Image (cartoon, rainbow, N blue to C red; front, top):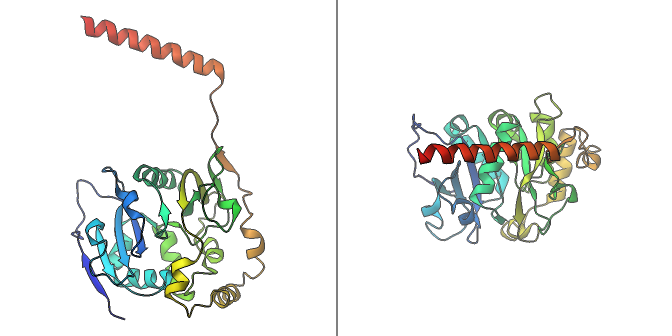
Length: 281
């Protein structure tokens, strides 16, 4: 396999400020990642691993860049093995498909919630108008996040420890089928609230499932991949119910009672009056 790696960032950490989140994207010609970095205050770096044939395509928008042909997960596994400093440099890693529509603010908040709740594995919920496989992963607007036992291969987020625990599986399924059943078994922190779907930061999956993956890799046999990996990790039955396992609960959006809102509004008005008096002196 011919690989061209062109790093645009100095790998020496910036001692004054370091982004602690890394997005690694397997990008084709029609990737939607420009929307992710359109706003200036982003809290993540972007590594584009381009699988197309146009030299330098997307390189200008990447913090790290390479070209590499092949299916998503084995190529990401190779990328991480060849660049181990990346795993130690960042605290959280997002591996989205390239047909995901999202804003910079959405992704910043996604990472903030991931860290704030001490998650090991998660994914943003999908908007209700997304192409989807599992309706349990569509956004539930009344929640910030739901704790679960299943995260899809489309948009998973790992912390560093979870990534190290799961990296070896990336090469075990060329299509990616079966990996999402295995990861929760490998990277939980011994807590039922370490894996979640983040409803507060939904992203939109814009294209029908499987498109470019199967078009560019016609030799893939996803069902055989899934069968093999489920047998290896003895999870054949597990897959039937894990996608519905939200028993650990959820964090809901709850309004303050009316009397607290009223009291806070009075205090806000009093604070404005004090500020007005001070500025007149």
